[in-house]
Length: 101
Image (cartoon, one colour):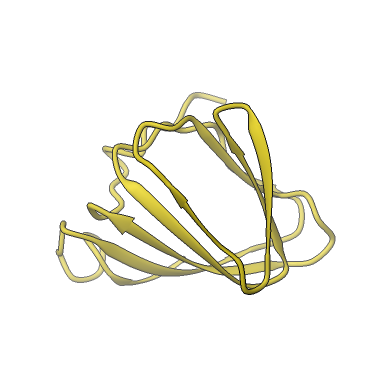
């Protein structure tokens, strides 16, 4: 994770922008963020479970997930997934609301 703008990098709480690379086989626990998140895929594929529905994003595709949705990000594919993540307000570990594994 390479945050370019946001709480961790610049102290800006209004929004965050981060360049991400998810290795093959990666996943996170479910979460219910208090921020909107835009994912913009650069290469590879990323799987996103949104309120029980599964979406696969591929290179050159983007997706907006509204605050309050229960989501799970993963890369069950055999190649890294490279993407940008834009959060409004900024990503915060205190507002991502990750569930215990």
